[in-house]
Image 1: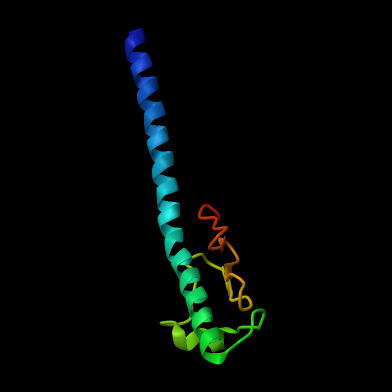
Image 2: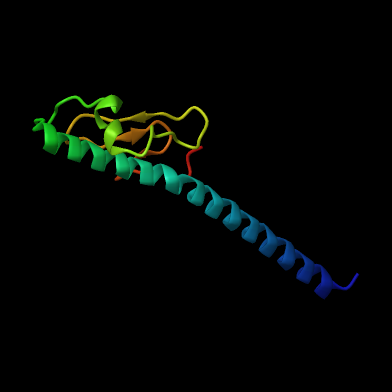
Length: 108
């Protein structure tokens, strides 16, 4: 077999592997974006609830408190993941992806 063809085949295989890796990474980030948006919505709902109820920083917030400000109960698209609303002034978090400021889109 011609050495040029072997080298060309190796380069093509490496390029294909890199493309596949990048595609998988992009799909994971896209799958995590709805979770990030839900965390942002939970935070906005908490802030609205705190303003309307005059809740002090550090006050406990339950899902039932902020549910009227959301379109429905937040659910992460990763099986078994849960959201913690946190207290007033704290970021909500996802048990898989973390918080908005420390978001980990590659954790599944």
